Image 1: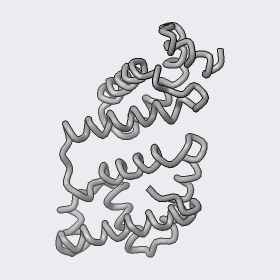
Image 2 (image 1 turned 180 degrees about the horizontal axis):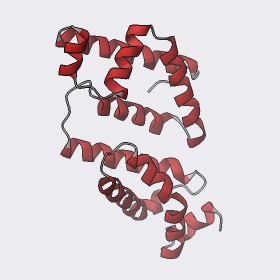
Image 3 (image 1 turned 90 degrees about the vertical axis):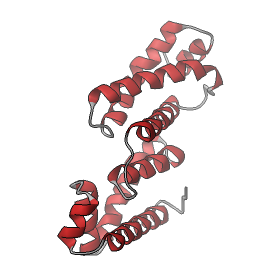
Image 4 (image 1 turned 45 degrees about the vertical axis):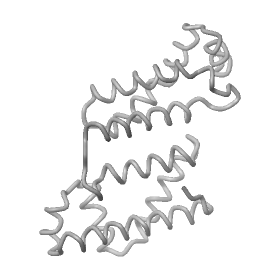
Length: 184
């Protein structure tokens, strides 16, 4: 059965049809959350909660639109709420950058364009000078804490946070320019 038919039947209260939608998207939603959480139980719980929220709100959904982006936006909102409740992080932490990227993707890109956005981000990374690129790698790839980075780079905390702010701004501008002026 086609996605649109399953959505319409689900909106009429057909639980079997909604179950079909869950089967279609559960892997995608779980993967989307699992890469952002270190605990698989938490990602499974949030994925399940995503479908509970979707079931309650399916009557509000336009069946002519693709379901995937809507489900991911629910998952991202639940993830954001989870992080606010459970994991207070200092400004400049990798989860903050992930959240900003996730919000930008959720608001501005369809599933087809996500790979293009990631490719563009990689291209923009390659245009950074060596010191900025190394800073991004240490902070966001190797997840080094700010305190450790200040020692490694021999700079004070405020200098480091300003450099991180600048590199995020440069990357954001580059991505937006290369994707045709899309802004968040």
